[in-house]
Image (cartoon, rainbow, N blue to C red; front, side, top):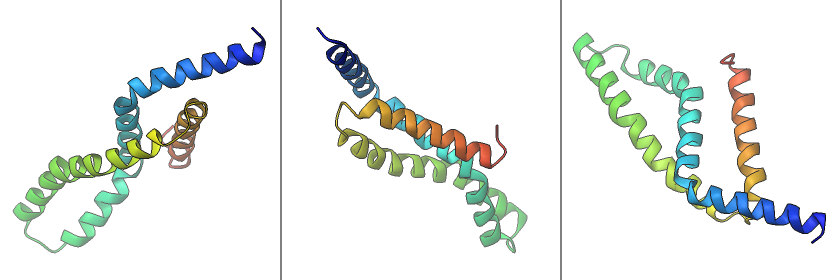
Length: 113
């Protein structure tokens, strides 16, 4: 077997493994995005509830953190999962690694690294 065939087989094996763990990969992508941009979302919520009673503000904060971020995760995960499932197997490992590098770059730009 030639080198190209071996490389192709290795990439397809990695893609197969990634497909087995696609839910975990997608969850880590969405969670990382929420970590990077969660402060911007919370600032938006703070502006909207700024003039309310302290008890109401705390209740909205708890509700949004507990349920809002869960909703965002539950809403975004199937979208990202469907998108990743549509990618050709030979490209999947490169796309996933590229996504994580982009997330790292975004975190670096926000001085998180």
